Length: 67
Image 1: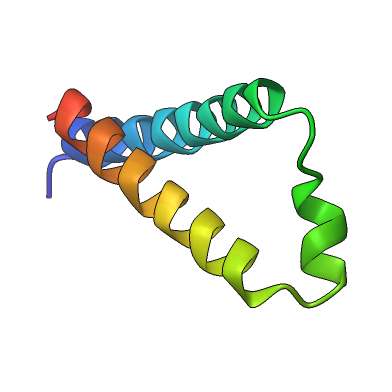
Image 2: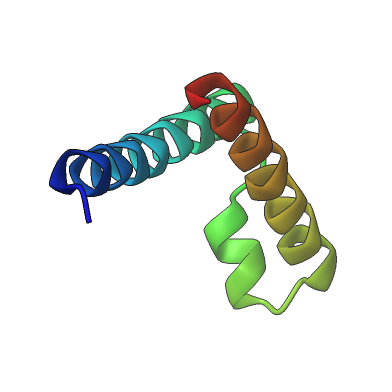
């Protein structure tokens, strides 16, 4: 087992989470009229599906850029 490979995987995982968080914050900043947290509290399934698709898209982009 090579420790440098394991360390790089953890670094990529942390970097991926940070980039996903930043991308979500940018998207939230670009759509000021929509309060995603409030809509989720109301039980809006469409917003939940949209946010899930947004995270999946961001994850694919970040994953391909880190590879």
